[in-house]
Image (cartoon, rainbow, N blue to C red):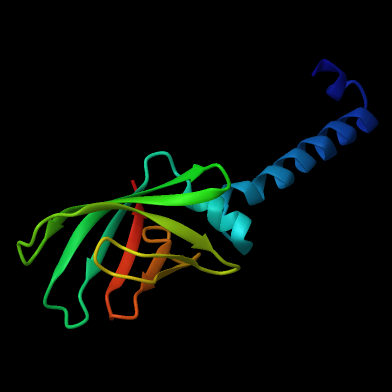
Length: 142
């Protein structure tokens, strides 16, 4: 490090090297900006996601824990409902996950074809989606 301050040329070299390292690392901090690889990195949080959901008529809602895991070449979602406004049985299940260019798709424990999209403008709930039945989902990092 002492070498970096021995001359103007060495100082510029060190500064340029530092900037190269910082700008190379920066995109990794915003892992899900584009493509299936970025979505996969975003999903595979060890602590998982807190999922809030609401029914099509707004008459029922709940919370769940969703954890995405890599198992060989595939991704699996472990879903566990933690509360429901209608008092129904709290279900847990595992579902296979499909990751596309701009969306993640998987079934729920009682819902099907849930599509989630990355929203880079919302740091609190970066994943949002819906199902064909009209259920809406939003996921927050745990």
